[in-house]
Image 1: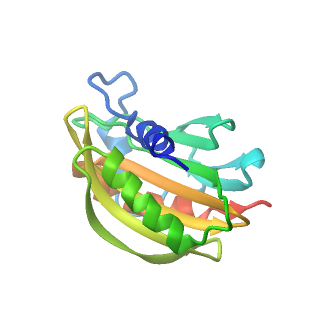
Image 2 (image 1 turned 30 degrees about the horizontal axis):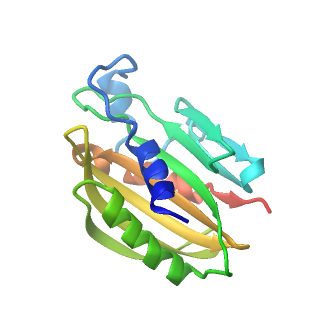
Image 3 (image 1 turned 90 degrees about the vertical axis):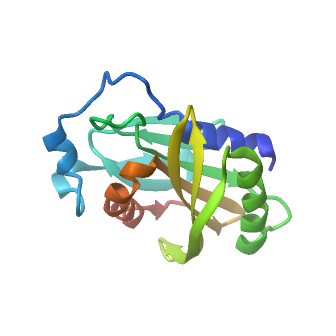
Length: 191
């Protein structure tokens, strides 16, 4: 594990910054995302077989998988008035020396503080991911002069760290919390 890995993963999350709005969705469609969850017909399941998981995502979001880096990225559409494309990534990191969740998250906190411009932890806690203990952190940062808020969840299973990172502009972050919950509820380990 290296700081470079954290930078790759967070750059993927931060790639949602945009000055133009070619994929802008109508305000009425954006409003349908808030508050509450997406209807079942608007959710698809993505299987990342080589990375050992499946996860739900909004059906109209773009998906990119890079199995060599161990990352799957999901990109939404630009909401009117917003300069950032909300997105989330799932990264899978092979662990060495049978590292546990506590040790990994301690190292992860250091990596985030070093690699995220303007890093400031907002909150954190414990939860589960498909029945596996997990740790969450919400933190702020910036990219391309856009104030961002991130939701990060990490679980360790079978000598792998599964890192879920959602990024949104701070102004839109609260609107996407129900969608984040829905996507994580649809996460399943496959190995």
